[in-house]
Length: 160
Image 1 (cartoon, rainbow, N blue to C red):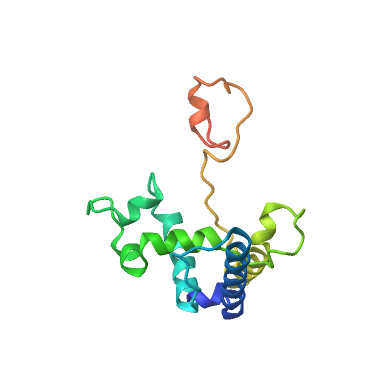
Image 2: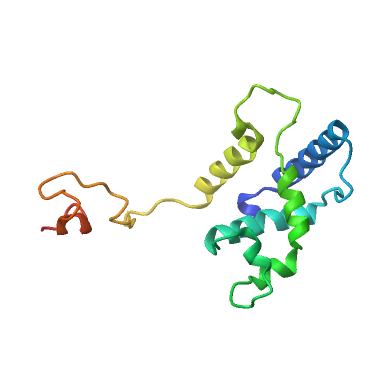
């Protein structure tokens, strides 16, 4: 499955356009940002890919991906985009018109993309019969459910 199977080209273009619009709106409102340059479609695709990688390879601090220490650094992320560029893109990241609905909830910033990605993800992946659910996610309320009980460390259908 390719990147564009879930993140449609139209979504990437829309978020690129809205991010540039939001950056211009903020710069006009706040008096300038000398470090900003408009987002290209390659920047936007790279940013979404970096966010995806950071979700899998999490670090204590975001800046650790660009660390000078090789054991902490993520070369793939560091070679795609500089830390300063990443910070600027995240500062102005937007998927919706910034002037629409100032009283709208905060998730309105990314809602159009999240909704479309959710739909495309469901189309690309169908749930199979055997799905593993981590036992620590399933809450257990029953005999021996006190915090020190060994039953708390087993899944619900496992006998104590």
